[in-house]
Image (cartoon, rainbow, N blue to C red; front, side, top):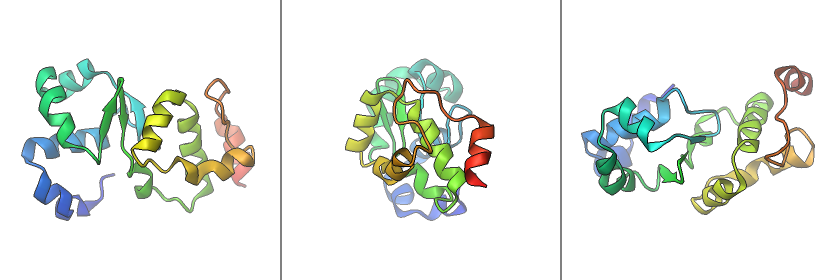
Length: 149
């Protein structure tokens, strides 16, 4: 769910035109997104689902969404996405960690450079609550339920 304060956010009001807002909302709400806000999404799919031209996306629209949304090597990175999750919930933290464990290391490095708060989940890795290696298998729903009880 998108926070209703989206429309009163000063960055949205002052920096984005209507087409930029549309694309920003798309990145927050499309069916490919996940709980961590870093997900793979090819430009062809973005263009098809939004009806926007690929050239316009790469040359003008995507650059205008920085620093809220980055698009790198076919991956969408939304640095503040987890700030809008219930971070006090262990289940949410584990879900975010599991999704991050699926992201290639190269993309995680980009995300860190874009101020994505990956370090906030480091204690989950240290506690073996999530896998730290992309090659590892994420926790199953049953394992997650066991850990949060």
